[in-house]
Image 1 (cartoon, helix red, strand yellow):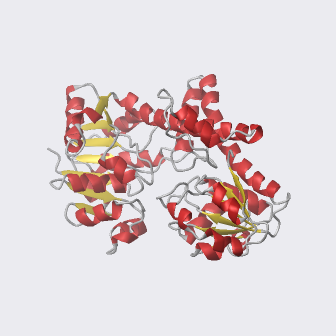
Image 2 (tube, one colour):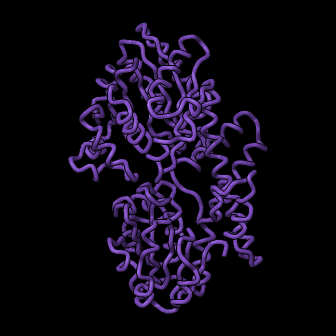
Image 3 (spheres, rainbow, N blue to C red):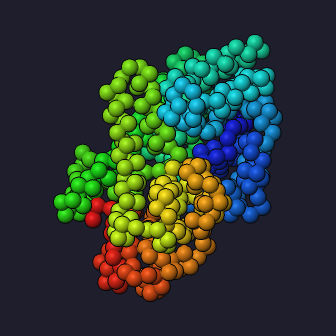
Amino acid sequence: MIKNICCIGAGYVGGPTMAIIAQKCPNIKVTVVDLNESRIQAWNDADVNNIPIYEPGLSEIVREARGRNLFFSTDVDKAIDEAEMIFISVNTPTKTYGIGKGMAADLKYIELCARQIARVSKSNKIVVEKSTLPVRTASAIKSILDHTGNGVQFQILSNPEFLAEGTAVEDLLAPDRVLIGGDSSQEGQKAINQLVNIYVNWVPNERILTTNVWSSELSKLTANAFLAQRVSSINAMSELCEKTGADVNEVAKAIGMDSRIGSKFLKSSVGFGGSCFQKDILNLVYIAKSYGLDEVADYWEQVIIMNDHQKRRFAKNIVKTLYNTVSEKKIAFLGWAFKKDTNDTRESAAIFVADDLLAEQAIIAVYDPKVKKEQIYIDLNYLETRSEQQNSKGLVVFDDPYEACKDVHAIAILTEWEEFKTYNWQNIYDQMQKPAFIFDGRNVLNKKELEEIGFVYQAIGS
């Protein structure tokens, strides 16, 4: 029976997942550890509304379990030593150097975790891969752990997350499936059952799938690739709709009613963002190329190419509509997060649209209800397209959406926050330069009503 769990990594996966496990398994002590002191301090903040990750419902769950059986700490060694089961939930970014640069997953943090576990452990451990990893990473982890020379026995499990940011709590409480991959040996099956026994506290048995490790690792990459492919497919059709006079929303509804296709992930947009889709597809492309499967690699790489094209196309459409120049024109961005109900901005379309418009010497005014000003400048400066001083001059962040939209030539909606639908758009229109343009990259507003006010409304695919 597992009594102590340690999770290495207090990010978007580790924090929410461990909070749910702690809530549903009050008899298990759950310790989330991270070397980032400010992040751990934020998780321990007296006001749970200040925890570092915004997800609907998460703060309430943390409030319930924290201090009872949920703990956040920077003492990694202590947590590893006490735990019978250790989740590895650290970042696996795309490599920016060496072999596989720009495609392969950077596994240095995974290896560091494995070496630390090997060094500290004095008793047998179950090590669970929670990070999204390339297929056969488990064998590398096991090789490190099995050569410690201290007699400790390790079992490696793959338990990938299938969370959608913005609905992570809901996804954890009522998952479509929980996937657990492990070794076929008696010890491996025992380890699988130990993890199954944790999830059955709230997940129906029939939704818990057990496989071998390799199938589990590859399933996560495949799931994200398929979802991203649907987004790129409908975005490709949105461009064709614009040329032919078709409405992409009507096309999406028509094909989504086909039971073989379904309606999910058929909403055209500025393009997908987030930490997973692009990174995982590039990883899949690299794996395919490493096995000499060039046609497979080319197929999946096209999903990324289409997504990048959609972001650039949106920016070009703004420039074209504003009489082929946005120089010194003020453009408001409503939304910076890559999707609603999260403060995550990784690979957000807003970053790249802003970068293109700043290159055209536009002035950008940004409002997002959950993304902090500091993060917006970090995102833009990370591109290294221009100096930090130039970015600070060209882009201004506002705490009030009405102030952000005042005296602007156009508004671009980059995140589908529900609050945008509640604004007094007549007041906003009255304060704008005329003609007043609105570009809806997320299709969240009513086109007819806005055009009745006087907006020149343009949405992707319309």
